[in-house]
Length: 462
Image (cartoon, rainbow, N blue to C red):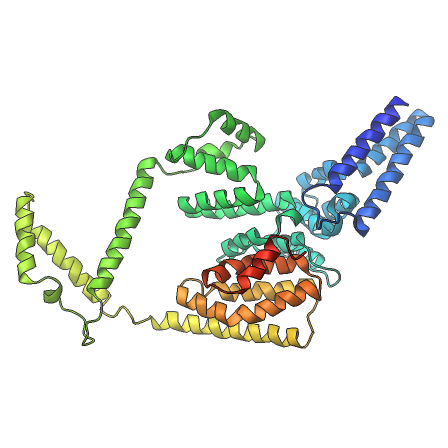
């Protein structure tokens, strides 16, 4: 009797923990998948309690199967570690009560992890598996969830490439309450690996601090603490650091990170300041004169100033004053030669920008026609349209003027598109993703849409 009560309390606790976990798709945790999973658990629990009356073989076999059904998130790790792709996918559906509406995405992610652990996998099998898993997630029925979108982005960034960082950074705008912690930690690790490969330490610190604040990722806190401890920019509690290190699984690779020294950071910071100052000075030097002609070297360095520089070089006891003056003259000559027409834009760059703007305009018109004719499709199709639009939009992000032109082009269309996704299609999580992405530029360009974006992001509109 005591064993039965203990098992009942343990199962009840596990059910409560699974239902109230952070990665539930909506505030209403019970949906069809969760109810079905709860029924499976109750059947397994009844089989477990009734088996205690029978002989030893039954009382051992039934509890073993029942425990596997009731605690799938524990034993599902075995086929993932062994690299069994298909079993990892289909056995994940036994965790319906924990995965809820995101069971397709979570099952596909488990299969993807198994694929990464599979030794000696061929390139063809890898490509086929990714295509099959993506089709499982991007189904034509039902609303798309944040985990569905995150899984697709992880599949799309499997091989790396120029858009890997951009796609992974966009994951930040997903709704925190609807995303699986295991999947978001995987995305962060891949994004951080990209930043570490570039040895961009300011980017490493920025990403760690940003993702730590929103996603509460222990690895982000650990990397940020390592950065501050190495650069001596902020005191780090050694006890808290050691606990965080243990909590992250004692990563041995942490000591091998080629973090910069404080001296390197100071030099880099000073270098960046000097570079900015140099660019400002050069831009002032080579600015067009009122007549439209580029100033000559004599205008930039008259003979009087040249004499003053020569006297200063002698007063500073330079070993070779003439060599110092020659270096100054050479720098100005180079500046005049390379930047004689600062307002002229490279033809190839201008052509790339025009092509990107043309494709963006075509994409916006396509969305506008479907939205005004009320022909919006399933959430998976609209999400793919959003990925295409976001890719074109980011190509115009280098120059502030181009980004403003791109934002002005897409603002009204994206606004109405997002509203229809939110109100008519009930694609709340996709609409939230769009709001989170567009809101920074809306605030930057003082758009009225920012107020509604903020209300959506704060949960004031549902």
